[in-house]
Length: 182
Image (tube, rainbow, N blue to C red):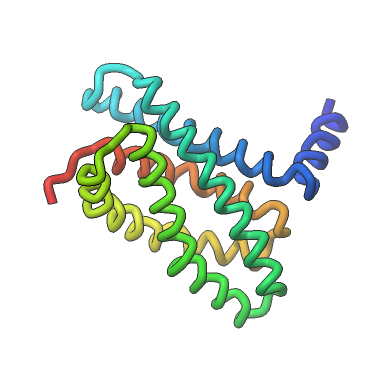
């Protein structure tokens, strides 16, 4: 059984299957993050029951994020190979100032499309949610990406990203489905 699992896991991380693996991971982790957030909201009595449609939207939002992350890490590792301090700093800079805003915007655009939001609702969403998510991103991702860029093999970057992202996805679900007055 263990040999079979190792063979399968080795196969899904082969280059020819890696995009599918990464998208599947992002889809799954986005759904699990929302389920955890909803379970917390149920326990706090802020919602009455699990909203399957909400979880489906969050899961679907993981598809374009998985694609973006896969392509981003592939590009980044080709353009900035190595594990020196100089390369690490460049990758962190690109990650925080380019990739993070792209990923957060991709998430918000995807959710707006899934919810058939008007342009005004979408721009309001950007104003209230983008900065909350981006500030949280600055707390979570720089330390996590030091480990990702310095210690891990490139083929495991999105897997690691998704493991860390589980907590971030819980917060993303919280931010996306709560109204803020500011």
